[in-house]
Image (cartoon, rainbow, N blue to C red; front, side, top):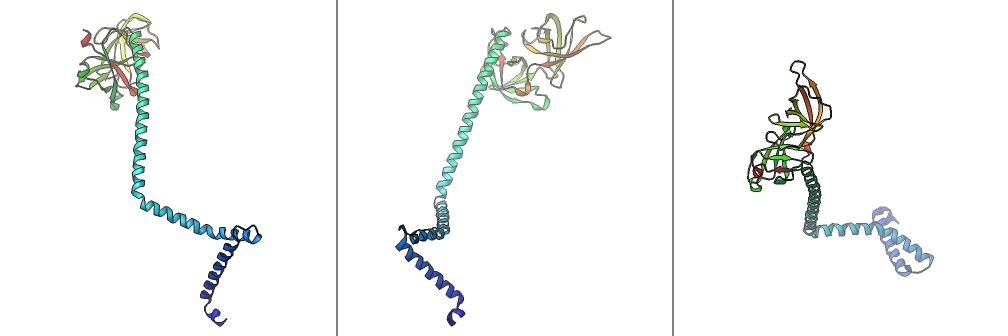
Length: 276
């Protein structure tokens, strides 16, 4: 007893060892038996084993990660590459569907406007000039495709503009809303009403009528007249507003273009030089 009082820590350790040894012996004799002692022993052992089992699993997991780190890294790289590949395939599939739909709409528009007799090239829009109301674009077709300067570019909604410079596989197009571009038009409701419009520098067109006595209405559709560079019957836009100057009697108008230049994906080039 004197020894125990002076060696408390050692005594507690010895008692713990004896207790564990006893549990082991009892479990060996009682585990699996359908007695109250066997069931109680199994319950005690399961409680004691839980922290040791969890610690063992953690150690095994850490060892596996260390010994297989290179293999896991390779598998992760392969998975990331496959995900990127699938994402690219999905984007291509979406773009293909969009392109097919836009090409169908372009073909219908050309047929409806009597432009199906022209040689054409349908191509993607490679770049948009966002600095000036999208009034200039670059397309993915050039001299190798038969595209030349002053060819006319249209979209499914209507007029886009004309080619101003061209390379083997690209061409730059100034849109009709550019402030340097002019287009002669007719009013679709009354084809005898003629005028000219140019880019207003704000994404719209502004112009005037030749006939001071012509009657114009808000919402009137304007189409190309066929005078100048542009073939006839290409939709341009809709009259947003107009006014008559009291001195000159000229009717001035603002035109909202049909084409949304900020969302152009596919366009058709009318090969004017091939059709002369």
